[in-house]
Amino acid sequence: MSADQRPHVVRFSLLADLCLKLGERQQCASMLVHPSRGEAVLWVPGRAWPHRWLGVAAVDHRGRWLYAFGDQWSVAGDVAEAAARVAWAVRAR
Image (cartoon, rainbow, N blue to C red; front, side):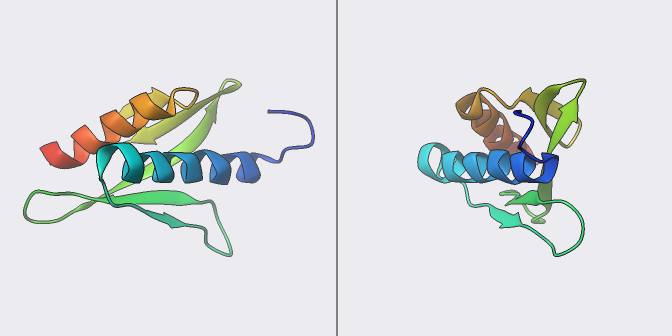
């Protein structure tokens, strides 16, 4: 993250990239929410019944951006890998 990038801007950008990759590669629906107060979150609907939504956050952990979802995490630098892991998580629920 460069000095001119604010954390919430980076967070939104990372989640938007993941949202796009989930649709392109995994044929997995998702919804990016950017509230007027608070931070952005990506919601991914579970495929098993009953349908539950999985929340995905982008977090800065010791200077390294990660995607955190459920009890898992994935490095934000590899969006394709993160998308595969999120898609697997919602299919397994």
